[in-house]
Image 1 (cartoon, one colour):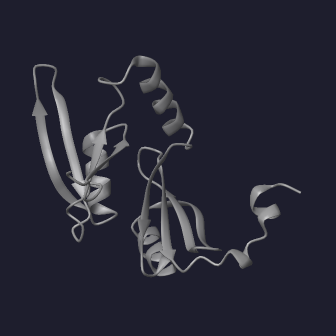
Image 2 (tube, one colour):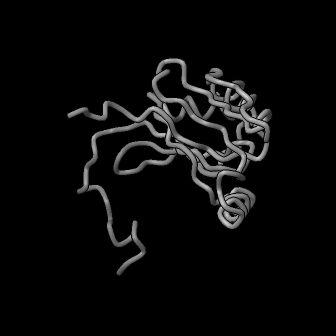
Length: 153
């Protein structure tokens, strides 16, 4: 029996493929993977990847076909109002990465904050997607006030 060996592709919906490609390359240090126009309808297959992990490509896709119109519109609305999640990115120093990315003009909606699993900051890409930047630490459930975290009493 064949086994699945790893995740190789994830999709991030964007409003403009060219602008998104430049943002991920210029701001986050990704590199171009593929950039191919296919078929008579002009469908564009565009990927970027983090150079140290070329096995995982990020497809930068405009919401539209092959999605149905209702789903594509829902994705566009969630990007426009800043509630569409996209990626989690690991770093070895969240505070330093935050400072460097802020200097490059990256918009953060949450500065580095302590969490039970490490230090986390939340940024937006140029399409409105939020990206989580995490400096992982071993999870310690005893440091969590579960009532405060969940809003439950």
